[in-house]
Amino acid sequence: MEGKIYVAGHRGLVGSHILECLQEQGYTNIITMTRNELDLRNQSAVLDFFMEEKPQYIFLAAAHVGGIQANNTYPAEFIMNNLQIQCNVIDAAYKSGVKKLLFLGSSCIYPKMCPQPMAEEYLLTGELEPTNEAYAIAKIAGLKMCEFYNRQYGANFISVMPTNLYGPNDNFDLESSHVLPALLRKIHEAKLNNSPTVEVWGSGEPLREFLYVKDMAEACICIMENYDAANFLNIGTGVEVSIRQLAEIIKNVVGYSGELVFDVSKPDGTPRKLLDVSKLHDLGWYHKVDLIEGIEKTYKWYLEILI
Ligand code: GDP
Image 1 (cartoon, rainbow, N blue to C red):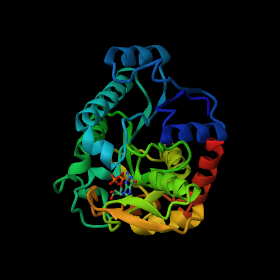
Image 2 (image 1 turned 90 degrees about the vertical axis):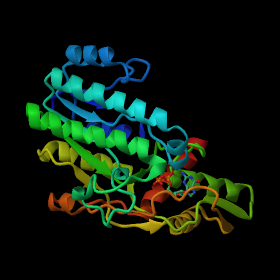
Image 3 (image 1 turned 180 degrees about the vertical axis):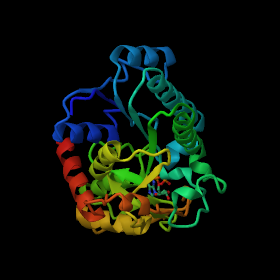
Protein backbone atom coordinates (compact mmCIF):
# COMPACT_ATOMS: atom_id res chain seq x y z
CA MET A 1 0.00 0.00 0.00
CA GLU A 2 3.03 2.30 0.44
CA GLY A 3 4.65 1.47 -2.92
CA LYS A 4 5.22 4.53 -5.09
CA ILE A 5 2.62 4.67 -7.86
CA TYR A 6 2.67 7.03 -10.83
CA VAL A 7 -0.63 7.56 -12.63
CA ALA A 8 0.22 9.02 -16.05
CA GLY A 9 -2.79 10.86 -17.47
CA HIS A 10 -4.50 11.50 -14.12
CA ARG A 11 -6.69 14.27 -15.56
CA GLY A 12 -8.08 12.09 -18.33
CA LEU A 13 -11.19 9.93 -18.27
CA VAL A 14 -9.54 6.70 -17.10
CA GLY A 15 -6.57 8.16 -15.21
CA SER A 16 -8.77 10.35 -13.02
CA HIS A 17 -10.82 7.32 -11.97
CA ILE A 18 -7.75 5.14 -11.39
CA LEU A 19 -6.41 7.86 -9.10
CA GLU A 20 -9.71 8.12 -7.23
CA CYS A 21 -10.04 4.33 -6.83
CA LEU A 22 -6.44 3.98 -5.60
CA GLN A 23 -7.12 6.65 -2.98
CA GLU A 24 -10.41 4.99 -1.97
CA GLN A 25 -8.63 1.65 -1.61
CA GLY A 26 -6.05 3.18 0.76
CA TYR A 27 -2.97 3.54 -1.44
CA THR A 28 -0.97 6.37 0.07
CA ASN A 29 2.06 7.04 -2.13
CA ILE A 30 0.71 8.24 -5.47
CA ILE A 31 2.41 10.76 -7.73
CA THR A 32 0.90 12.69 -10.62
CA MET A 33 2.17 15.37 -13.01
CA THR A 34 0.12 17.82 -15.03
CA ARG A 35 0.88 18.34 -18.72
CA ASN A 36 2.52 21.68 -17.89
CA GLU A 37 4.78 20.09 -15.29
CA LEU A 38 5.83 17.17 -17.50
CA ASP A 39 5.27 16.86 -21.25
CA LEU A 40 5.27 13.09 -21.79
CA ARG A 41 6.27 13.64 -25.45
CA ASN A 42 9.62 14.98 -24.25
CA GLN A 43 11.95 11.98 -23.98
CA SER A 44 14.68 13.51 -21.81
CA ALA A 45 12.20 15.19 -19.46
CA VAL A 46 10.40 11.86 -18.97
CA LEU A 47 13.63 9.97 -18.29
CA ASP A 48 14.81 12.64 -15.81
CA PHE A 49 11.47 12.44 -14.01
CA PHE A 50 11.63 8.64 -13.69
CA MET A 51 15.28 8.66 -12.53
CA GLU A 52 14.52 11.27 -9.89
CA GLU A 53 11.18 9.98 -8.62
CA LYS A 54 11.82 6.24 -9.04
CA PRO A 55 8.16 5.20 -9.10
CA GLN A 56 7.57 1.45 -8.64
CA TYR A 57 4.19 0.99 -10.30
CA ILE A 58 2.94 2.80 -13.39
CA PHE A 59 -0.57 3.16 -14.79
CA LEU A 60 0.04 4.44 -18.34
CA ALA A 61 -3.34 6.08 -18.98
CA ALA A 62 -1.94 9.15 -20.77
CA ALA A 63 -2.88 9.29 -24.44
CA HIS A 64 -4.08 11.55 -27.22
CA VAL A 65 -7.70 10.39 -27.61
CA GLY A 66 -10.88 11.31 -29.45
CA GLY A 67 -13.95 10.08 -31.29
CA ILE A 68 -14.39 8.97 -34.86
CA GLN A 69 -14.21 12.44 -36.41
CA ALA A 70 -11.12 13.60 -34.49
CA ASN A 71 -9.30 10.34 -35.27
CA ASN A 72 -10.22 10.55 -38.94
CA THR A 73 -9.27 14.24 -39.32
CA TYR A 74 -5.97 14.37 -37.38
CA PRO A 75 -4.26 10.98 -37.93
CA ALA A 76 -0.75 12.47 -37.92
CA GLU A 77 -1.25 13.94 -34.44
CA PHE A 78 -2.84 10.74 -33.17
CA ILE A 79 0.03 8.51 -34.26
CA MET A 80 2.86 10.89 -33.33
CA ASN A 81 1.64 11.97 -29.90
CA ASN A 82 0.69 8.46 -28.82
CA LEU A 83 3.89 6.83 -30.03
CA GLN A 84 5.97 9.49 -28.28
CA ILE A 85 4.09 9.30 -24.98
CA GLN A 86 4.16 5.51 -24.74
CA CYS A 87 7.75 5.01 -26.03
CA ASN A 88 9.07 7.58 -23.57
CA VAL A 89 7.17 6.24 -20.56
CA ILE A 90 7.73 2.53 -21.26
CA ASP A 91 11.45 2.93 -21.94
CA ALA A 92 12.00 5.24 -18.95
CA ALA A 93 10.11 2.75 -16.77
CA TYR A 94 12.50 0.02 -17.88
CA LYS A 95 15.63 2.16 -17.44
CA SER A 96 14.62 3.33 -13.97
CA GLY A 97 13.74 -0.18 -12.76
CA VAL A 98 9.97 0.09 -12.42
CA LYS A 99 8.48 -3.08 -10.86
CA LYS A 100 5.31 -3.18 -12.92
CA LEU A 101 3.65 -1.13 -15.64
CA LEU A 102 0.10 -1.32 -16.98
CA PHE A 103 -0.38 0.07 -20.50
CA LEU A 104 -3.87 1.04 -21.63
CA GLY A 105 -4.77 0.32 -25.25
CA SER A 106 -8.08 0.15 -27.06
CA SER A 107 -10.41 -2.35 -28.72
CA CYS A 108 -9.77 -0.57 -32.05
CA ILE A 109 -6.53 -2.59 -32.33
CA TYR A 110 -8.54 -5.48 -33.84
CA PRO A 111 -9.23 -5.89 -37.57
CA LYS A 112 -12.24 -4.06 -39.03
CA MET A 113 -13.83 -7.35 -40.09
CA CYS A 114 -12.73 -9.32 -37.03
CA PRO A 115 -14.84 -12.34 -36.00
CA GLN A 116 -17.04 -11.41 -33.03
CA PRO A 117 -16.59 -11.39 -30.11
CA MET A 118 -12.96 -10.37 -30.57
CA ALA A 119 -10.56 -12.62 -28.69
CA GLU A 120 -7.01 -11.52 -27.87
CA GLU A 121 -5.68 -14.03 -30.44
CA TYR A 122 -7.27 -12.10 -33.34
CA LEU A 123 -4.75 -9.26 -33.10
CA LEU A 124 -2.97 -8.62 -36.43
CA THR A 125 -5.09 -11.06 -38.44
CA GLY A 126 -6.58 -8.48 -40.83
CA GLU A 127 -6.77 -4.86 -41.98
CA LEU A 128 -7.66 -2.13 -39.50
CA GLU A 129 -10.65 0.21 -39.58
CA PRO A 130 -9.42 3.26 -41.60
CA THR A 131 -11.11 5.96 -39.42
CA ASN A 132 -8.90 5.14 -36.43
CA GLU A 133 -5.97 3.35 -38.01
CA ALA A 134 -3.37 5.85 -36.74
CA TYR A 135 -4.49 5.45 -33.13
CA ALA A 136 -4.76 1.67 -33.50
CA ILE A 137 -1.25 1.36 -34.93
CA ALA A 138 0.15 3.38 -32.02
CA LYS A 139 -1.70 1.20 -29.49
CA ILE A 140 -0.54 -2.00 -31.19
CA ALA A 141 3.04 -0.68 -31.02
CA GLY A 142 2.55 0.02 -27.31
CA LEU A 143 1.25 -3.42 -26.45
CA LYS A 144 3.99 -5.06 -28.52
CA MET A 145 6.59 -2.89 -26.81
CA CYS A 146 5.39 -4.10 -23.41
CA GLU A 147 5.48 -7.69 -24.69
CA PHE A 148 9.00 -7.32 -26.11
CA TYR A 149 10.40 -5.56 -23.01
CA ASN A 150 8.94 -8.44 -21.06
CA ARG A 151 10.48 -11.05 -23.40
CA GLN A 152 13.94 -9.51 -23.77
CA TYR A 153 14.42 -7.79 -20.40
CA GLY A 154 12.00 -9.67 -18.16
CA ALA A 155 10.17 -6.41 -17.44
CA ASN A 156 6.76 -6.87 -15.83
CA PHE A 157 4.92 -4.67 -18.33
CA ILE A 158 1.37 -5.68 -19.25
CA SER A 159 -1.37 -4.22 -21.42
CA VAL A 160 -5.13 -4.03 -21.28
CA MET A 161 -7.45 -3.32 -24.20
CA PRO A 162 -10.65 -1.63 -23.00
CA THR A 163 -13.84 -1.38 -25.00
CA ASN A 164 -15.51 2.06 -25.50
CA LEU A 165 -15.44 3.83 -22.13
CA TYR A 166 -17.69 6.57 -20.76
CA GLY A 167 -18.52 8.30 -17.50
CA PRO A 168 -17.79 11.41 -15.43
CA ASN A 169 -14.82 13.51 -16.68
CA ASP A 170 -15.44 12.46 -20.29
CA ASN A 171 -14.99 14.90 -23.17
CA PHE A 172 -18.34 16.43 -24.20
CA ASP A 173 -17.01 18.53 -27.08
CA LEU A 174 -19.18 17.64 -30.07
CA GLU A 175 -16.39 17.69 -32.63
CA SER A 176 -13.84 15.56 -30.76
CA SER A 177 -15.86 13.38 -28.36
CA HIS A 178 -16.97 9.78 -28.59
CA VAL A 179 -20.55 8.87 -29.33
CA LEU A 180 -21.95 8.43 -25.80
CA PRO A 181 -21.04 11.84 -24.37
CA ALA A 182 -21.90 13.47 -27.71
CA LEU A 183 -25.42 12.00 -27.76
CA LEU A 184 -25.95 12.73 -24.07
CA ARG A 185 -25.16 16.37 -24.68
CA LYS A 186 -27.09 16.67 -27.96
CA ILE A 187 -30.20 15.02 -26.51
CA HIS A 188 -30.01 17.10 -23.32
CA GLU A 189 -29.73 20.31 -25.35
CA ALA A 190 -32.55 19.24 -27.70
CA LYS A 191 -34.78 18.75 -24.64
CA LEU A 192 -33.89 22.19 -23.24
CA ASN A 193 -34.47 23.88 -26.60
CA ASN A 194 -37.69 21.94 -27.32
CA SER A 195 -36.07 20.84 -30.54
CA PRO A 196 -38.19 18.24 -32.42
CA THR A 197 -35.16 16.29 -33.72
CA VAL A 198 -31.62 15.25 -32.77
CA GLU A 199 -28.90 14.50 -35.27
CA VAL A 200 -27.09 11.14 -34.92
CA TRP A 201 -24.05 10.50 -37.10
CA GLY A 202 -23.99 7.55 -39.47
CA SER A 203 -26.69 4.94 -40.04
CA GLY A 204 -27.33 4.03 -36.39
CA GLU A 205 -26.60 0.40 -37.30
CA PRO A 206 -23.02 -0.03 -35.94
CA LEU A 207 -22.81 -2.09 -32.77
CA ARG A 208 -20.71 -0.94 -29.84
CA GLU A 209 -19.92 -2.16 -26.32
CA PHE A 210 -19.69 0.39 -23.49
CA LEU A 211 -17.97 0.09 -20.11
CA TYR A 212 -18.50 2.53 -17.23
CA VAL A 213 -15.16 4.12 -16.42
CA LYS A 214 -15.23 3.36 -12.69
CA ASP A 215 -15.47 -0.35 -13.55
CA MET A 216 -12.52 0.11 -15.88
CA ALA A 217 -10.46 1.75 -13.14
CA GLU A 218 -11.25 -1.09 -10.74
CA ALA A 219 -10.31 -3.66 -13.37
CA CYS A 220 -6.96 -1.90 -13.92
CA ILE A 221 -6.16 -1.97 -10.19
CA CYS A 222 -7.25 -5.61 -9.91
CA ILE A 223 -5.00 -6.56 -12.84
CA MET A 224 -2.09 -4.54 -11.44
CA GLU A 225 -2.48 -6.42 -8.16
CA ASN A 226 -3.14 -9.92 -9.46
CA TYR A 227 -2.13 -10.55 -13.06
CA ASP A 228 1.45 -11.13 -14.23
CA ALA A 229 1.77 -12.30 -17.81
CA ALA A 230 3.19 -11.00 -21.06
CA ASN A 231 -0.18 -11.49 -22.80
CA PHE A 232 -2.54 -8.53 -22.96
CA LEU A 233 -6.15 -8.69 -21.75
CA ASN A 234 -9.45 -7.39 -23.11
CA ILE A 235 -11.59 -5.37 -20.70
CA GLY A 236 -15.28 -5.01 -21.41
CA THR A 237 -18.77 -6.16 -20.55
CA GLY A 238 -19.43 -8.63 -23.35
CA VAL A 239 -22.72 -6.78 -24.08
CA GLU A 240 -23.37 -4.72 -27.23
CA VAL A 241 -25.99 -2.25 -28.43
CA SER A 242 -26.56 -0.48 -31.75
CA ILE A 243 -25.99 3.26 -31.95
CA ARG A 244 -29.75 3.63 -32.51
CA GLN A 245 -30.47 1.64 -29.31
CA LEU A 246 -27.91 3.74 -27.44
CA ALA A 247 -29.64 6.94 -28.58
CA GLU A 248 -33.01 5.52 -27.44
CA ILE A 249 -31.62 4.64 -24.00
CA ILE A 250 -30.17 8.15 -23.66
CA LYS A 251 -33.51 9.67 -24.71
CA ASN A 252 -35.21 7.73 -21.90
CA VAL A 253 -32.63 8.73 -19.28
CA VAL A 254 -32.77 12.40 -20.30
CA GLY A 255 -36.56 12.39 -20.75
CA TYR A 256 -36.65 13.57 -24.37
CA SER A 257 -39.37 12.47 -26.79
CA GLY A 258 -38.23 14.00 -30.12
CA GLU A 259 -37.10 12.10 -33.21
CA LEU A 260 -33.67 10.79 -34.14
CA VAL A 261 -32.35 11.91 -37.53
CA PHE A 262 -29.48 9.92 -39.01
CA ASP A 263 -26.79 11.82 -40.95
CA VAL A 264 -25.37 9.19 -43.28
CA SER A 265 -22.80 11.61 -44.67
CA LYS A 266 -20.87 10.94 -41.42
CA PRO A 267 -18.83 7.71 -41.14
CA ASP A 268 -20.13 4.60 -39.36
CA GLY A 269 -16.66 3.31 -38.58
CA THR A 270 -16.23 -0.36 -37.82
CA PRO A 271 -19.56 -2.30 -38.03
CA ARG A 272 -19.10 -4.25 -34.76
CA LYS A 273 -16.63 -4.05 -31.90
CA LEU A 274 -17.52 -6.57 -29.20
CA LEU A 275 -14.74 -7.90 -27.00
CA ASP A 276 -14.36 -11.50 -25.93
CA VAL A 277 -13.88 -11.06 -22.19
CA SER A 278 -13.58 -14.72 -21.21
CA LYS A 279 -9.96 -14.35 -20.04
CA LEU A 280 -10.96 -11.44 -17.81
CA HIS A 281 -13.92 -13.42 -16.44
CA ASP A 282 -11.59 -16.37 -15.78
CA LEU A 283 -9.64 -14.05 -13.46
CA GLY A 284 -12.90 -13.50 -11.57
CA TRP A 285 -13.49 -9.93 -12.72
CA TYR A 286 -16.94 -8.83 -13.94
CA HIS A 287 -18.27 -5.31 -14.59
CA LYS A 288 -20.75 -4.01 -11.99
CA VAL A 289 -22.45 -1.05 -13.63
CA ASP A 290 -24.79 -1.79 -16.54
CA LEU A 291 -25.36 0.63 -19.39
CA ILE A 292 -28.57 2.26 -18.16
CA GLU A 293 -27.21 2.79 -14.64
CA GLY A 294 -23.92 4.11 -16.03
CA ILE A 295 -25.69 6.59 -18.31
CA GLU A 296 -27.86 7.74 -15.38
CA LYS A 297 -24.76 8.34 -13.25
CA THR A 298 -23.00 10.14 -16.10
CA TYR A 299 -26.04 12.33 -16.81
CA LYS A 300 -26.31 13.25 -13.12
CA TRP A 301 -22.65 14.26 -13.13
CA TYR A 302 -23.10 16.22 -16.37
CA LEU A 303 -26.04 18.18 -14.94
CA GLU A 304 -23.95 19.03 -11.86
CA ILE A 305 -21.02 20.40 -13.88
CA LEU A 306 -23.37 22.54 -15.95
CA ILE A 307 -24.52 24.44 -12.85
P1 GDP B 1 -15.64 4.54 -32.66
O1 GDP B 1 -16.22 3.57 -31.68
O2 GDP B 1 -14.16 4.50 -32.74
O3 GDP B 1 -16.28 4.42 -34.03
O4 GDP B 1 -15.91 6.03 -32.12
P2 GDP B 1 -17.15 6.95 -31.73
O5 GDP B 1 -17.56 6.69 -30.33
O6 GDP B 1 -16.75 8.37 -32.04
O7 GDP B 1 -18.35 6.56 -32.72
C1 GDP B 1 -19.08 5.37 -32.61
C2 GDP B 1 -20.26 5.37 -33.57
O8 GDP B 1 -21.24 6.33 -33.16
C3 GDP B 1 -19.93 5.70 -35.04
O9 GDP B 1 -20.70 4.86 -35.87
C4 GDP B 1 -20.41 7.14 -35.15
O10 GDP B 1 -20.74 7.52 -36.48
C5 GDP B 1 -21.65 7.09 -34.26
N1 GDP B 1 -22.14 8.41 -33.81
C6 GDP B 1 -23.43 8.82 -33.89
N2 GDP B 1 -23.56 10.08 -33.46
C7 GDP B 1 -22.32 10.48 -33.05
C8 GDP B 1 -21.82 11.69 -32.48
O11 GDP B 1 -22.54 12.68 -32.29
N3 GDP B 1 -20.49 11.71 -32.17
C9 GDP B 1 -19.68 10.63 -32.37
N4 GDP B 1 -18.39 10.72 -32.01
N5 GDP B 1 -20.12 9.48 -32.93
C10 GDP B 1 -21.42 9.41 -33.26
